[in-house]
Length: 120
Image 1: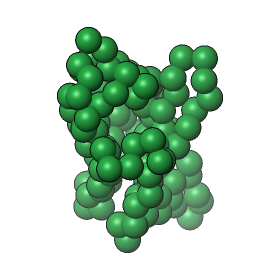
Image 2: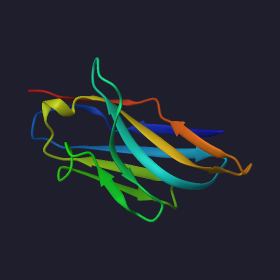
Image 3: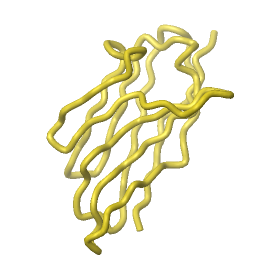
């Protein structure tokens, strides 16, 4: 069993910043990829940013240069620093963690989501 918990969402004005945090716990032996997705109202969930076990990152074009993803392998956490926020960044942000368990099986776990609202 692997649990993923996000925190840090909220209401912010356009141009502001928010920092999302995600922590994975449970029977984890290794984590390969940690990602952030978001889902706006009446839209499909989309990948925002991803970081691999060796620190390689990739971003959706809509957030590149404004968002930064980082991870702490010792703590099984991933951070999404969001700057210069725009109203179109509004949505529920989900953390996704992929890796292996202590039972030698793979896992693909999601958090419950955290709401980000960018509005004046």
